[in-house]
Structures are given as C-alpha cells and as structure tokens.
Image 1 (spheres, rainbow, N blue to C red):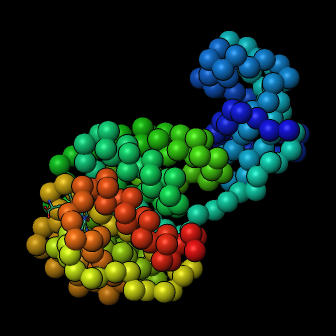
Image 2 (image 1 turned 180 degrees about the vertical axis):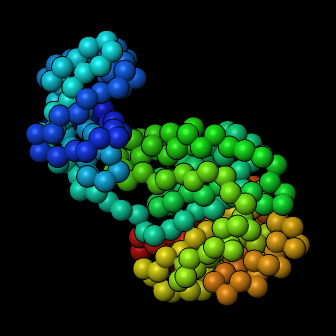
Length: 241
Ligand code: SAM
C-alpha cells in the first residue's frame, strides 16, 4: 500500500507510533487534501525513514496519525556541505531547494565581501529544504544554517574536510575536480553575483584543503553555478557513480 501525500513531521516514527498533527498539518491534510479517517499519508522526519501512516483522528484544529509500516529506509546523502553567498530572495530559495534535492548534507549561507544581502530568513529557507524532500521522495532533510561570515567558517574549518572552491577567475581553464578520495567529508563554495574579492580569492586559493575548480568557459549566474558544481561533485565524488 502506498500514499500519494508525503508529509514531513518533527516527531519520532516507528511501528504503531501515534503522531499528533499541528493545526497547519491538519488543515493541509483534512481541508486542502480532503483526507479522512482511514486515509493514508507517507510520513518522514529526516531520521527514521519513511512510514506509511493512517488517519486515526481528523479535526479542524488537529488530528492523529498512526504509523503502520516503514516504506523506505533513511537514505543519507554524502557528507557534503554546500556553502553559498545569498543572492536575490527567489534565487536563494532556488539554490537551497536544488542543494537539498541534489544531496547536500548541510547548507551554509555565507557572507562574503560582495554579498549583497545582510540577512536571510533561516526558517523560510529550512522550509524550502523540507519541501524539496517532500516533493522528491527524500527521507533526509539537510539543516540550513544561519548566515555566517565566510572568514569565520574558514578559520574554524574542520580537519579532513576538503573544499571545492568554484573560482570564477578560472573561467575557461581546465581546472577540474581531480581528487578521487571518495567517502571523505567535502564542501562546495559558490560566491555571490559580484564574485569573490581579490583578497578572498588569494586567501581561498592558499588554503591547504581547497581544490580550485573552473565551471567551464562561461561565467554562470550563482544559482546556475550551484547546480553545475553539485553535479560536478556528485559525478566525481558523490553517490551518483
Ligand atoms: N561577477 C563575477 C564575474 O563577472 O566574474 C561572476 C560571479 S558568478 C555570477 C557567482 C559565482 O558562481 C562565482 O563566485 C563562482 O563561485 C561561480 N562561478 C560562476 N561561473 C563560474 C566559472 N566559469 N568557473 C568557476 N566558478 C564559477
């Protein structure tokens, strides 16, 4: 038996587990999707895989679902962080959605010298990551961090994590991801529409854990670069091959 509706819940899932619904979830299931008692929903919470659940109680302001059976085990993505400089709102939403769909384990918005937005709505971006997992049948949801200065993250860089630095100054060069150490912790860094400053670039190129790459002979917009970089990394080092 399968369910057409998939719902992310912040609640433990397991055999016979009851799940109390929030007002918003009850509204979505019972008013918008017209589900009733006995109806089925696929639930996931980012840790316990996907569970088929049945509507036990349905109301205007709440309801209760009961887990019947696990329909998908948890599928963890590779240990990949995705660092990007926020750009205009809608395109930032797009970047978060694509990073979540394409297998980022963590998404870190970073403030660089030319980043034009001073703050982000972390809760809204997190909701986009959840929605991407709901739409794509995912069982894992990457955490979206709060906006942090890139320099701070680099100063506290964890040992052993490699960084794929997408350097627009290498446009047209043959610099590709040459590493073949699969299974290592990695990160991808994409700059803002204005690119990286010379100072930032010199610092990044000098980092021992940085692998400088070109994303081809054309300058890509930041959101396009995000998808190109994720594709390149997944193909070379991720779970696509
Ligand atoms: N304003 C910059 C310029 O004209 O050179 C372009 C910045 S681009 C819109 C935004 C980010 O996408 C860059 O900081 C870089 O991380 C990435 N990017 C875009 N095209 C790239 C390329 N051909 N090679 C490497 N990185 C690229």
